[in-house]
Image (tube, rainbow, N blue to C red; front, top):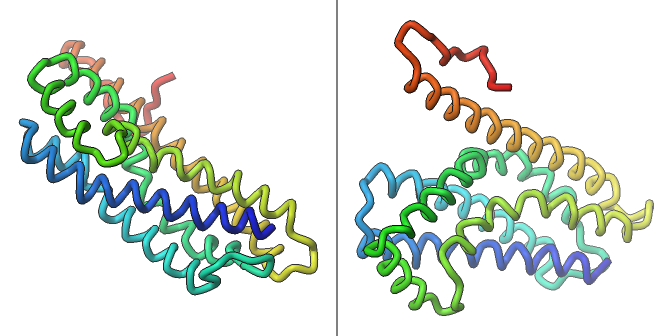
Length: 212
């Protein structure tokens, strides 16, 4: 249980490190070397600071609970307090595939590709931009996996047991909501594309409609 608690803490630290890199390393260099519109820059980076703030607060609370994870560490209750705050990443998760395709399509232009290669060569860890950009998408589904393993190693008499079980239910619910939001956004974008290709007499874009 101590090792699993340490993994939760260390993986949160790694996540925050990647978010900080996106905010302090990647965004300034993109703005300096890549020719995007203001709208494109906002879409690409605007969700990073609020996500970073939420997870910095979570990490600080985890360290208050126990700077060095032990068998007694209680993270279930802490995560329950943050589950609803994780919804702040819903828009980012929903839009990730679009931004991933956008960056890859831009790579086909030599000017963009050369500029991004130059930025990536400056990364101190030798990683490419998308390996950072995908981390919020990967992080939220990982919480239930980590808590499920921790719960298996937590005896029924442990004070964190009931909170771990409740946090698991709530985390899976939020992840499902994020997935549904992503699917809804994807459907709306496809419907908008269809609408633009059809005559004005065809009205496709209505709130109650879904793409099957």
